[in-house]
Length: 77
Image 1: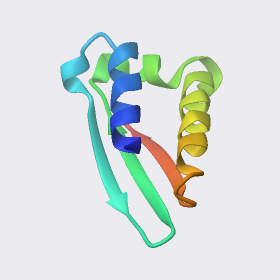
Image 2: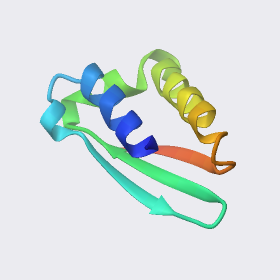
Image 3: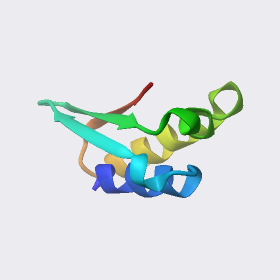
């Protein structure tokens, strides 16, 4: 569910939605989501001073509270 959420948000932000890839690494108490976008779109996902990235992380943590698991978003370049 979190993967779909991140993928949906990222595709809405970037110019090349086909370049959006989300890799999920499941742990016992946490889940790591690795977001990879096209080279020219990395700034659109991070935003000025990291505001967009922080907003995405906030939405993720709110969605993950139901599962009582911690979700970490890593934006890869």
